[in-house]
Every structure is written in C-alpha cells, then in structure tokens.
View (spheres, one colour):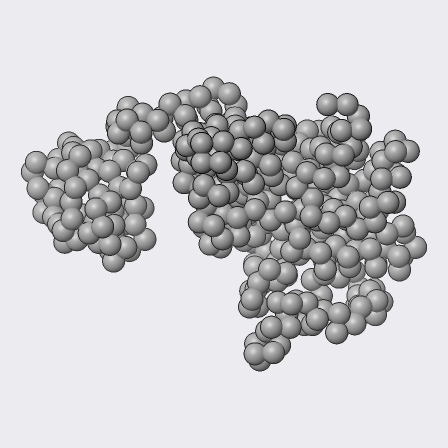
Length: 397
C-alpha cells in the first residue's frame, strides 16, 4: 500500500464523519506530527471490541508518525456520560472507577505501542478547576444546545429527570481537549456533541479547534449496540477460546462489518472473502471462522488463535469434549438447577430450569429435560455440558 492509499484509509476506514476535513487533509500533507486525542471512561473493567474500533484508528495514526494522547476519564467516569442513554446514568463511586481502570493502559497496549503514547488521567486538571473557571466555561454553552440532543429531548418530552450534572459532562470532556492541546479527537458517533464541545472550548481559550473523526459503532453479539451493561460484548481480556466462541455466535449479517472495523485485513481481501457469502455461494460459517481466528490472533497471538480454532472445531463441529475440563463437586440427590447456578452457568434457578427444559443441558451426552432433575449415581464422574461451550466434570463431593 503506497503513501496515498495509506492516507486515504486513514481518513476513510470506519469513519462516518470528519469535521474539518479539508483542514485535516492539509495538515497531513504538511507532514507535521499531530496530537491525536482519545478518551475513555472506565465504566467497566474491560475494554471491548466496540471501543477497540477507535483504538485501531489510533494505531493507524501512530504508525503514520503522529502523537497519540490517551486519556482515562477517572474524573468523568464518576460523573457519567448519558450520550447514548435513554435515562439518567447514575454516578459511579471513585473506588469503582479506580478498580475498573487498573488494566486499561495494558489493554490498550494490545493494539498501541504504549511506550510512545502520552498517557493521562483527566482528574489531573478537572479536579483543580474552581467554580469561577467552571462558570466561565459554562458560559460558552446554552441550555438549549444540550436539551436539543435527541436522547435528552425525548426524556424532557416525557417528563423524565435530566440532572444538571449531565449537562456538565460535555463541558468536562471538552476541557480535556484544551488541557492536552488536541489537534484531532477520535470517538464514536454517539460522542459527536461532546467532542464538538472541545472545539468550542479550545476556541474560547485561544487554541485552534480540533478536527474530529467520528467512527462507526459496531453491534454486539446479540445484534444490539455493543455495551458492557447489556453483556453482549467481546472483551479484549476474554480468553482465546471464549473470544473465538463469541465471534462464532455473531449474526451472519455482521461478519463483513467486523472484518472492516475490528481487523486491519486489507479491504479488497475482505471484499473477496465476503462476495461469495453475499451471493449465497459460500457458507458464512467458514468465513466467520477466519474472522474469529484473525481477531483472536490480534489480541492473543498466532499460536493461541490456532489452538482456539482447533478447540472450537473439535468441540462444536465434531462434538468432542475438550481435554481440560473444570471439575465440580456433586452429590446424589442434588438439584441440577441449583448446581448450574452455583457454577455460574445460570443466573438463577428459573434461568437454569429454562435451559434444562429447552434441551440445552446434557450429562454424559444425554439430554436432561426435567427442570427439577436431581443427580443420580450414574451422573457422577460424567461430563456436564451446558449450551455449546460450558463443560464441567461431576466428581464426588
């Protein structure tokens, strides 16, 4: 790929909108290293693939010689961003946020060379602001600008509470751009209002307003927006086998989007892979295997990807039991539903009984369909299987 193609990809792949595009293209042609800002609130301990879309774009910029400025929102994380929420987001405790962020830099390091990244926590500057400074910044914005946002307008219309705290969040994220003197900010399309706030505040403080790259939001493994609160995520910290299995559970219509936004396989190669699927001339499962293997390779390495593929094929395609299975103590007469709950294989006894009655549970390859089934002597030292990927060996307690 020549330099022109690289720059084209830099400003096209996964990008929905560029604010200040002509100016940004000019800056890139001049060859001056730019300060590329990305902020992330640690609302969960895990960074998922949805958040890795901007991380990959940061890597593209890093490889092109630009300075990545990575901000963990330890302060804004406690405040709560409601950009994509239909109700008020509760404040998180400082302790929760600090616990969540412990491995964020390490997780980002799966894609970025963190030795070259400028790293910050936004409490560095936000905790130091005075009321006078907050009032000065707040004067840049109007209430109507905030309430005109679609999700906020809907809440106001139906009489749902909108807190003053929520109105302050975009201002805080915007001030991050002032603090680090960002040239470019990268974020999802749901962050448009917040990132634009950065431009306004930079102008207020006499800085050149940052250019903005708004990226695609990918859907989760259940077809909804990927969100930690919904549990439909593929996390960068997932074990290789788990990551591989989650990708294989994707709806077929998401395969192409995941190739484009979650990998860096060449776009022409992706088109060649996907065209037979789109034309119903190839089995989507075969292409999905390649996708799963590539994503596991990116985060765990070639060997782990190969092993995860073999595990998946042997376990789910050939219906073989994996060599290494966790053991769980069992006694004759114990209720199977309760055992599933204790092993974390069901969220409640009701959920466990539903899985059993729907035929999702086997012992020694025999389907158990009685929701109130109790373990028998013949079940001990046998393999319990729940769904497609969860195995336990029942041993005498």
